[in-house]
Each structure stands twice: as structure tokens, then as C-alpha cells.
Length: 410
Image (tube, rainbow, N blue to C red; front, side):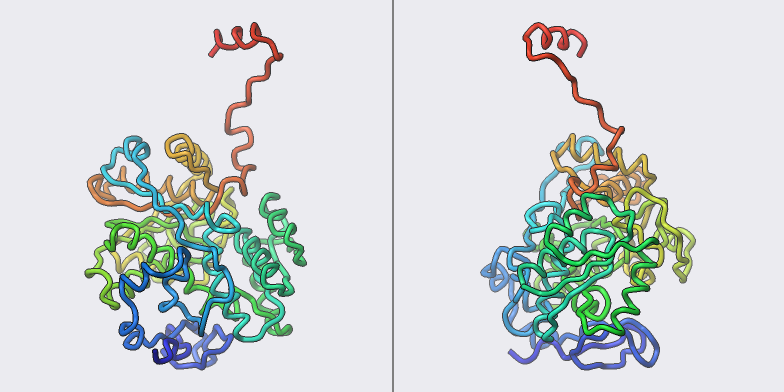
């Protein structure tokens, strides 16, 4: 096959760049993205070729920006798409699915998708040190995959991150640096460091390649639905990249002749305490105004989203919508998903389900439509959110009479 990646191009002025670890246009300062040779790709890709591929995200390798064979994340992706019949009854809808990225991935989050691509590309470029700015899940994934790849690793996180996510990075023995500030403070510092050290920052100088891994989340949904796009996809947003790549995945599968023209509405979910993308949609604005995060959903606490305006455009173009969830609504949605479908999601998943419920109640999602809710991380990483919000266990003596007495009170 001819080269499938022509290089990079600016999203704003469309100026072309070589296939290098670059992320910002030097002329207009717009973000760079991968420039694919779709004509060449279409000659080699088919439903059958994808189905013959590995049970991982790499079954879609023809539409991912690596040269040769994948070098990282060989066990990431192809997570379950679950028909949620109990949740359907609870929400009063006819057909609802959970795309569950909280399981099967090595570090139990959607971020294993993007890191698989980023670190594969880092190896191709010859880097020996990888790094990232993270609200938690990305840190876990970069640290784990760096350990497998025998790469040096530096992780930068807000100092007040949930302890579960901190430990889930430290265990892989990277150098972890906590920054006293928000994620946006962390990201600004990392941008300066990236200009001084020859490191592969997954979400900075490798961002154009890294972001492409998000497409596989939507590719899998379509394939798992029998090569049909759903009526609605609801996903959480931090930096906004996942929203944009869901839109891109739908367009690419249609361009490749794999599906009919999709009519999927893409909806964005954010916490009330950090919802700049949703704010923009509600205000019908063309400018994403940064906010200072204040929410229990720390993995979504990015007040100045890098892909914010592109996420807004993706939602609008699809006919979708956006909504906020309060901290209380986040917790209740986490409990609802666990009690109906046995899925323990982190706070980001609580945001997504709470927003789904609101959009259904507002009539923005028809109750007869086919709905897919994106769950991107595991609840074991954010147990602090449920402290004092779930019942205490019953403590009794190891005696039958004690149990029988307890039963009279239940």
C-alpha cells in the first residue's frame, strides 16, 4: 500500500508539515492533525480485513498513524458494548448500550487507546523518554506502557489528584511530579519543559498522533452494532478530543465505504463545576471561555480545553447537544449504573450517565432511538467520591442469633 500518512496539516490554515513530533502551526498557531492518504487506505480496508484483525484497537491499524507494525498497547481496545436492559427500564428507553472502557484495558481506562498510538509513534521517532500532563488516567497509562517499553518516564499531575490514580502511576516506577495548581497550570509547565528536553510528551508534541487513538472507541461501537452507527453517542469531555474523534471516526468509516452515511447525534457531557464546552453550546457562542475547575470529576477538570472549539463544532454539526451534571448527580448516576448493570464507573462515567438522563428527560434524545453511553474509566480509581455517600456495612458478632436479630431490622 502507498504511504497512508502524508504528514501533518494545520486545522486552521491547512498548511502542510512533515511527519514529525510537531503539534502547532508555526504560521497561524493552529493545532496540527494527521493528514491521511484516504484514497490509498480505501484500496486495502474492508469489513472483512478489520474482522480478521486482532481483538484490540490495532484491528483498525489502516486508519491509525503508525508506520509498520504496532509497537505498543497490543492488548488495548475492543472493550465490551453491553446492552443495558436494566438501565433501559430505569430510564424509560427502548435500546441503550454501554461502551465500557473501564474494563479490558491494561490500566482500566479509555486512555490506553491514545497512549498505545502515542508510544508506538514515540518508538518510531526514536525517543527514549516519554512524558505527559495528566488528570490521572493518562498518567496511569503512560507510566504502565513506558514500563513495558522500557522507556524513561516523567509524569506531571495536579498535586490534589485522587490517591488511587496517584498510586496507579507510582507503582510502575516513573518519576511523578505533583504540581500545586490546576491541570491547566500543569499543562502550561509541561509545554515549557517540552521545549527544553528531548522527550516525547504524549499530549503535547505527539498530540496529533496520540489523539487519533480516540477514533477506535467509535470504530468499535459501529462494528459491535453490526456495522451500523447508533442514533446517539454521549461522551464526556475534558480537553474535548474524544468528542472530535468520534465525529471523525463516523466520517472515516463512511468515506471508506464501511457504513452508510451516519446520522448519529454526538452529545457532550461535562461537570457543572468545569463545563466550558457545554457553556459555549448553551450560550450559542463561538468562543470557549476558560473556567476554574471545581468538581469531584477531576479527570474532566480541564478549564481551558485544547480542542474545545472543535468539540463544539462537532456537536453542532451532528445535531447533538451538551449538558452539565452537578456533583450530587454524578454520584447518583455512578450508583445507578452500578445497581442496574453491575458497572462501577469513575466520576467521569457518572457525569456521562447523569447527562444522558437529562437529555432523555428534555426530549433531546428520543426514547425510541438507539443510544450509546460512553464509560471511560473504572470506579476503583475514584472511590473518594463515594465516601459517606454509600451505606455503611452492617457489623455483627459471628453468631447466628446476631444475624437473625439483624434480619429483623432490614
